[in-house]
Image 1 (cartoon, rainbow, N blue to C red):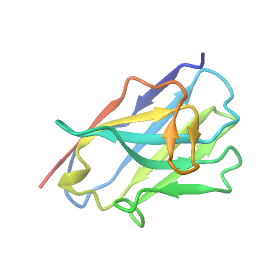
Image 2: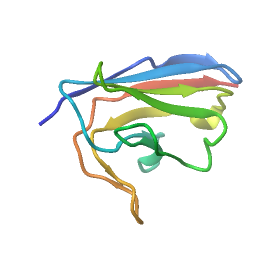
Image 3: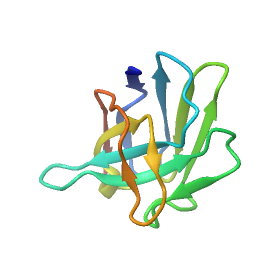
Image 4: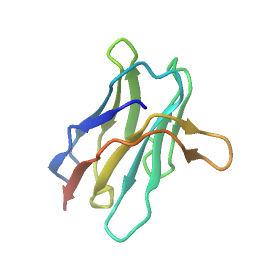
Amino acid sequence: QVQLVESGGGLVQAGGSLRLSCAASGRIFYVMGWFRQAPGKEREFVAAISWSGGSVYYADSVKGRFTVSRDNDKNTMYLQMNSLRSEDTAVYYCNSRVDVDNPLRPFGSWGQGTQVTVSS
């Protein structure tokens, strides 16, 4: 089972930016994804990317603000988050395998998560 480690979270003011990283212990040939969970809410999809990077998927709430990418040589996926809002506050998790068919669902391994807090 591949191990995932997220990093890059922190406290930022509204309108600011953060870049999250998800480092895997080995090569992942599947669609990988980012999810988030705010206090009292269910975990929700944020973004996903195919192995080649040629296909990307975003939740409507982050389109135009977040960019997902990956570097397969480094076994790492990234999430560039710009124009952050208070409603983006959550623990962000990466998943090693995401089925993007309807319904979209994660079924790979999870990282431990990284906290993102946006102050207004």
